[in-house]
Each structure stands twice: as structure tokens, then as C-alpha cells.
Image 1 (tube, rainbow, N blue to C red):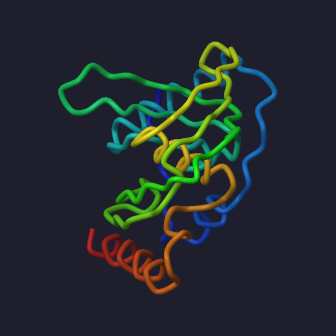
Image 2: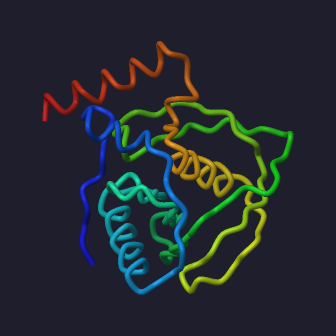
Amino acid sequence: MAIRRILTVDNAADLATLKKISTPVEAVTDELRALMDDMLETMYDAPGIGLAAVQIGEPIRVITMDLAREGEEPAPRYFVNPEILSSSEDTLGYEEGCLSVPEYFDEVERPSKVTIRYLNYQGETVVEEAEGLFAVCIQHEMDHLEGVLFIDHLSRLRRDRAITKVKKARRAA
């Protein structure tokens, strides 16, 4: 396993990659599982609760996630070719952050419940309902697969402010 570099919005080349639409995965192979292991290690190191493959420069439809709280047993999840089958009309506003937009948080409104289908780590098809933080996180990560960042859901002013803040923090570091 290896920790990969996470692409960020303050770098033009990184941003161009982050805006790519990810391609579907043909099959869950040992090579793909090795990538997912790297993604999980990278996500834990950051630290974060979700990571899309495109965020480490691999524009394929793969997500890792772990919503366990500090002090809880890790609960890693893997989503290959995830798709939303249905969404609730009810919405949930949640303060989101992103490893590709470091140190910036803002509220985004999303459906409070979604039904998703994906392949798991073993390549088995899973259909399940997500709500609360799980629903927010899976939708956030699935946006990455479409080249959408959480700041794209904000007003232009707030989006520009987020990018400026990330750039200033990088220069100060």
C-alpha cells in the first residue's frame, strides 16, 4: 500500500483532472483492489472520510469511505461504478469539506436519502439505502466521478472565496 498525492483546486493541472468525468471500471481485479487499498491509506492519512479515485489522479469510477468516528473500529467501504437509483425529495443541509479543497467548509443541500447500486471490494453487486452522513458523503464522492466539486454547488462568490483561501494557505505553508 502507498499514500498517493491528493489533487487540489489551487493547482491548474490538478483542477483540470478533478473536472474530468471518470470512466466505468470493467471488473474488480487484484490491481483495482490494490488501488482501493492505496486510496484508503491515503484517505486515512489525510485524514478524511471519503475519497474518489480521480482525487489521486485516476479518473475511474471508484470511491473509498470510512464513516467510523474517532475511537471506533475502522469500517472501510468500497464503491465501484456506484450509481444512484433513487433520491428522496427531502433534503439535508450539511457542512461539507473536501480533501481537494483543504481547510474549507460550507453548507451544501442534498437529498437526505438515496438508494445506490455498486460493486463492492469483492466485485459483488450491492443495492442499499443511504441516509444521513452516509447519503451526504456518497453523493459528495459520486459528484467527483462527474467532475463536480462540492464548491460547485455554492454561489460563484463563495466558490471563488474557497479557491482563494486554498491558494493563500498553500503559499503560507
